[in-house]
Image (cartoon, rainbow, N blue to C red; front, side, top):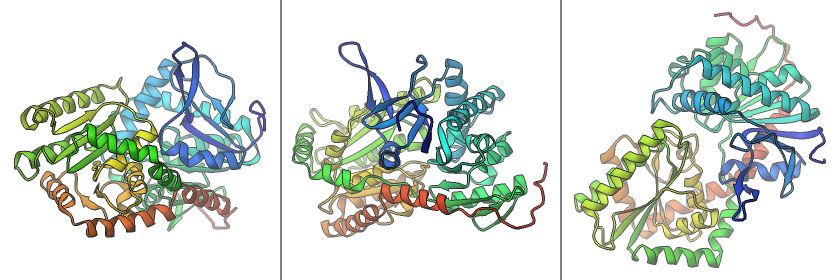
Amino acid sequence: MRVGDVQADLVIVANRLPVDRVEMPDGTKAWRRSPGGLVSALEPVLRANDGVWIGWPGGTDEDLEPFEDDGLHLLPMTMSAQDIEEHYEGFSNGTLWPLYHDVVAKPEFHREWWDGYQRVNKRFAEKCAEVAAKGATVWVQDYQLQLVPQMLRELRPDLRIGFYLHIPFPPAELFQQVPWRRQLLEGLLGADLVGFQLPQAAQNFVRLVRQRVGHKTHRDLVYLPDGRTVHAAAFPISIDFVGFDEMAHDESINQRAKEIRQQLGDPKKIMLGVDRLDYTKGIYARLRAFGELLRDTKLDVEDVIFVQVAVPSRERVEQYRKLRDDIDRLVGRLNGDLGRIGRPAISYLHTSLPRAEMAALYRAADIMVVTPYRDGMNLVAKEYVACRYEDDGALVLSEFAGAAEELRQAWLVNPYDINGMKAALLEAYEAEPKERTRRMKAMRKQVATRDVRHWADTFLEELAAVPGKHKKSVLPPNSH
């Protein structure tokens, strides 16, 4: 398939393209592969099926033609400043993100944001309808595009449509707050298969469809009046285990890990946090717990350092700027009160790091600390596990991260319980090598067998297998 051709048998629709526009030193523009799990997850699937990826390249650039990057067929969508404000920063990240993350922050409901969300979803659906071949498979990704499945179904009933939600899906008590709750549910029902990270989320969805839309449901199936069957199920996302394992074995990565330890003053133990700077990630509480352990002399700054990497995120949103200031102040205070010359308590980086540097950090860190208040999955936890090929290292993990369902051998914590978090950090710090090996071995086996290929293959197989027309007599949905 040439990029300009409009006949793809597999179309991936995501808010973002898998590449970012960057300015080179000589002032020219180029494309750089985006960091993150979604890209590494879908890239092999796209290549294998000669598919096309529709998404926004970021910014309010001019209209860009479809193009090819490293063998991937990419179709850029533009967004105006108003689209970014209403659809992306507004409804997606000011309404849905906090609501779907257990209202860690208060969601806002604005009619203009909803209008912008509908407008952008419609454009994505129309573009997809143009480029999909007859009977093609379309895989829509994530919370920014929940109306696309139904809009696309109306334009192209011949397509097989899958939708996958990468973040949590909330219980009915929270979801019901949304003024446009029914439209969102109906948007998702345009898909043949709706995928979630955890079984609980799929159950929440089916229950809401039954209560709010009035469709007949049975276990994980929804029967629509038009004869279609919609399947809702859990497909826990994962990582490219082999890729991370190979990087971890690389001599230059291990050399860099040694350098990192030296630069940090060769402490006995390194604790590591790597997160997007987001209020759902629990960074502030985690650093506070670590600071209290030092203050209580349970840990000594001569022996242990906490490295926290906070990747910049949504810098234009007030809540995120405030969070950054709060963490800056906390780190400054802890280092001022508890650090010594050449021995800070916390080494804090507010930056995005390349994959190789991340792998070196995973190799250098004795204890990985992943303590979000709520997370769909959290791939950092799995990446760390993949890099510990000597079956050493410890993982302290929030029970509210989707990954906790699979990585049962981590030290599981309730991130709202500072004392509990302190106890777990100390336990992981003091654990015998044998105990750490036992736990890490089991987690590595889990991540190796259920890697990202397994995730994508399982979803696409399930999508291909969703039954055709059902023969049940179904009443039209209720109208409340």
